[in-house]
Length: 131
Length: 131
Image (cartoon, rainbow over all chains, first blue to last red; front, side, top):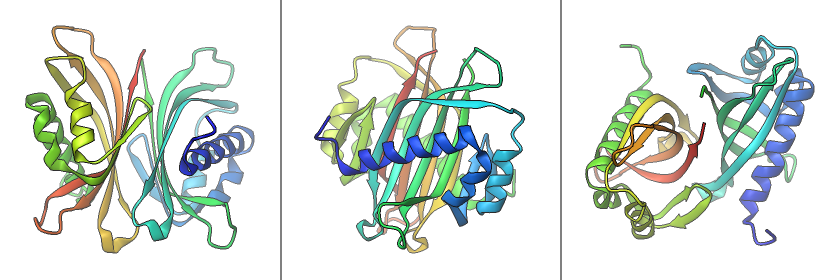
């Protein structure tokens, strides 16, 4: 476990943070996107931190819990950008349901030049996988 | 449908080609990877066209069929590279099973500079989603 590549550690830290914010207060996700960020949510595309946050906040549930089952990561070209590609598979539980739904999500993260160690989401693609 | 962005059309064409080759003769997939290509298959990472093809050819089935259910795509920074991020969810049937298994796969494609319109796989992440 100690030998995990840096991008996997980064990916896990980011994903834990992202879903913790998502499950606590979705409005705060805006800080993780920028004007050029893209979200494709269940096939519907939108762009920019405001539109993306609006989409995520409008989802029809009050309570939500993401449970990460697998989190894979790879570095992305060009090396000068230090991007990380993250692929999450997990279970999602909403409101008072006790029936988790499987989801898969892809993030392409780029480093926040002004905040060493912090990343923002450039690409975000999300799909539910009904059983 | 006629208004789909170019990257979605590219993604669909690539994915159809990729799974057609995979399901017909996996050894031919080597042409779609390069020495810097990365595959994370069910959490196991390997690098380079040879190692990736060897991994895919060694999978323990004789017959396989990928059926794409959804194919999402987004362009990737920097624009000068013209990369495309592709996110596939689908069903996989192996040998004589009639029980498809759900899979999710991510490709980061880069254009083949020598062959306009052709792409190669830089990042490839694959997961099965058992129901």
